[in-house]
Image (cartoon, rainbow, N blue to C red; front, side):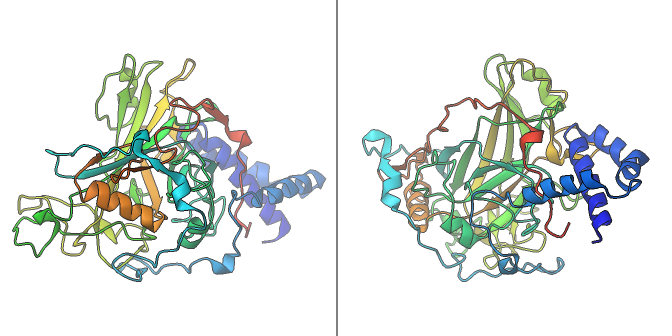
Length: 444
C-alpha cells in the first residue's frame, strides 16, 4: 500500500476496534458514520502520523511468547468447501512429536496417595476433567486467520501460553507452558483453547476465573463403540483424539447465518444464583446477582471423518451425533469415528460495579441484531503429550472412571490441573482494552 493509504487503513482499524469494545450499537454507529473516513482520510500525512505508525509497527512484533515463525512456514490456504481437506498421517492423526521436557516431572501421585477414581457408572461415558486458568488476550486466531496477526476479534486464550497467529501443531508441541497446569515447566497439555473475550462495555475485558474442561467418551469395551460389534445401535468406531486435530464450534464467525453447533448456553452459579440453560447474557442477567458467577458453556464435536485434521471451513471434518430418523444416537456415515468430546464451562465473577446489561462478547459485533452472548464459540488445537493423552484415554475413558482435577485414572495426576495458580477467583477481574497490544496484519 502507499504510505497514506496504509495510515488510512490503520486509522479505520483502530477506530473499529475501539468501537467494538463498547458493543454492537456503537460498532454500527461507527461503521455508518462518515466522520470515521473523514478523520482518517481528509488530512495529509504529517509528523504525528509518522509517530503513530512507528508505535503500531512496534506492536506488530508482539505476538506472544512463542518463537516467531517466518510466514513462509505457515500452511497454504485451504481450498473452498467442497470436501474436507488436511489429511492426517494415520487414524491417530499427525505423527506424535515427543515432548522436549521431562514428562514425569509434571505428574504426581493422584491426590497425594495414588488412589484410583471411582467408576462413572451408571453413566455410560468415562470422564477426564481438569481446570485451566485464564491465559493471555490477543487479536489472533491461528485456525481462522493463520499467519495474520491482529486481524481477528479479541480472544481469551487458555492452555498453551505461546499460542499466537503463527501457531501450528509443531510449534505448540515445542513451545509454551500451560494455564491448565499452573505454568509448570512440564506442561503435558500444550493444547490451545480459545473463546471470544468478554467485554464490560466500559472499555475493559472481563477476565474469567477459570475454564473447566471435561473430556468424555464411551469406553472401547462398550459394544456401541464399534460398528462391527454386532450392536445394531452402535454410535460409531471409537478412537482417541487425533494428534494435531483442530476445529471451531458454536457460532461460526466466518458465516453468521450458519447453524450454531455445540448447544452453547449461559448459566449462573454461586450465591443468590438460579441455575439454568439461558440462550444469551440478557436472559441470564436476572439470575446472576453480584457475587455469583456467569458461566458460558459449550460442547465440542465428537464425530470425525477419520482422515482430516482440518477442513477449509474448520468444521466439516467433524460433526455431532444425532438421533435422526433411526431413533438412537450415532455419528453419520461421513463421520463414523467417535472421538472424546469435551465440554467447556467458563466462569466469570459478577463483581460490584459490573453491569451485565453491558457485557458482550468481542465477536457479538458479527451479529449486531442478536442479543449479547449470541456468538459464543470455541476454537481448539490439539497438542497433548502423546503418552499422557494415552494415560487418560485408557485410564479414565476406557475404564469408565470418573476422573477430575487432572487425575489420569492410573494413580497419577497432572500437577496444577486442580485449580488456577491464583485460586478460584481471578484477581485481575478487569483488563483495560488499551493495555492489549493491537497487533496489525503485516501487510498493513
